[in-house]
Amino acid sequence: MKLSNNQIEIIRAQIARSIQIQSLQDDVLDHVCCALEEHDELEGEFEVAVQSVVKELAPDGLPQMQRDTLLLLNIKHIVMKKFLYSLGLVTAMSSSMGLCFKILHLKGADFLLTWGLLAFTLLYLPAQVILWYRTNENVALAEKLKIVFALLSGLITGGAIILRFARFDSSAVDMTFVAGAAIFSFGFLPIQFFNLYKKEAA
Amino acid sequence: MYSKELLKGTLSAIILKLLAENEKMYGYEISQHVKALTEGKIHLKDGSLYPALQKLTADGLLSYKEEYVGKRVRKYYMLTKKGKVETVEHIAEVKDFISTINKIMFPQLKTT
Image (cartoon, rainbow over all chains, first blue to last red; front, side, top):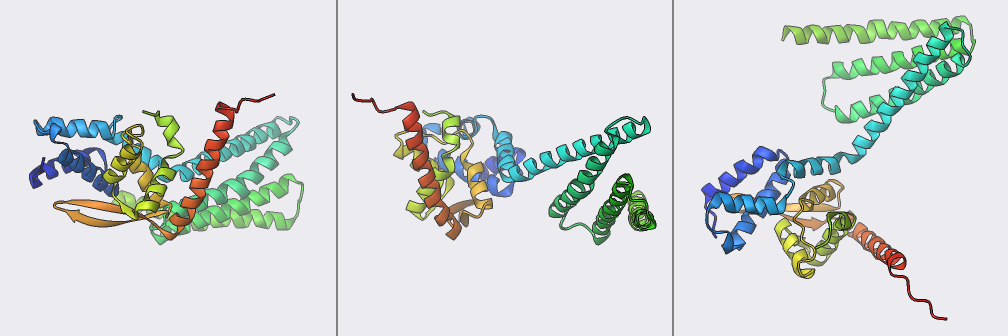
């Protein structure tokens, strides 16, 4: 069964409806065409023959094949994201419960707050920023700067709060706290609001 | 015909081994070759071949050369330098795995 150019285009369009990854599209198109060309018994109604070959190649459908491909290609990223979000959740929960305990003068408040904030500031925030940079390499410089300011202010402010809870009461700790708040207010916030304005204006 | 689950862990090794022996192959050719070699017992028709080829390419174990066949592109896959090294490791691992499974599933009869 020799396929005409028109028939190839029909198959291509059908595959493109389910698969957007170009490289995978090319593979599947060639496979379907080869199968149709090699098997004379498939001759008959063209549409039926195509459906039959596609069904044999991907019994769960072409969209599932694309999902499987994306999963395989991004498995490390997905696992890392799951871990990161779990870490973020646990540390945020620990910090907020610690704060609640502190207000109610309950035991364990310092422990929950200190370790929650420590892990949030030193593990979660930097890891989240690294992951963000890896997946957003081509974003505008302003957006990158915004993230740097957010990280810096988070690290400095978090550090100052931890030192406070560890009862390091000194003017240096106060200054650290002020520095963190200043970076957030004069670095992160202006860029964030400028971006919001730009988005609104567009 | 073997189940999808049984094939899952060995599919990459099968692809790498075939490419080590055949220099360059395209997807359909790989699937037909596997079918012929295994007398139809392994038929890569569960949609797993092409995701595996994409993954091996992304991992740098395979590269490909595109050739036009009429109006369509055919991708000939081949092993990279890294792929050649890892093929040896993959095959050794599968061999070891099969022998371990054999020990569990078909232990030799003990003679007294």
